[in-house]
Image (cartoon, rainbow, N blue to C red):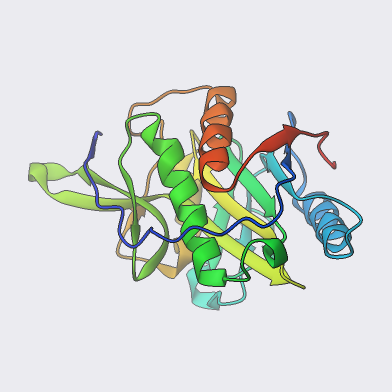
Length: 241
């Protein structure tokens, strides 16, 4: 399956940057249990809000699981016994996390970045789109659907829109947590247990399904370079868990 050029939709906003200190950039080499990650993420977000720690982007993978955002509809959990299901305070509906999917928990201090939630989400979309462009994948944002989408050719040449990256964030005291997930090479059949993000009319895809079999480390390098373009510099940091 190959991607075709896609519009970048409404991605245009950029957050102003009032603090020039680089954000931390951490990568966990092993799978991280979801409750462990959430506890560490919330602890770090609280420390940022209290000016006791700097910003952090934390890249990791989870074991197979489903999470339910604050807008999740019970009927969208199609196979409740397939994987563990976690209720979460992030925005959005049901999503899947698992091996082969790069999750990035983004803990940024929006007090120094303009206090603009819409611009923040738009910047997250722009970050993912810029990272995908490094693999010649044309990702795009859609005004009516949060996340990043690619257009592919289906049977008979029909143009299909499939989601390749999801966004679900929460703010507390103007510090963000939760974040984004990019489908690198997950088992896409695992998404069949839910209606991903409550959208039944479109499917999901991955870099691997599009023919780009990049190692996770290479994807991380693309994410880091694109993040620095959109949000500013980062510095290596030890993962919190």
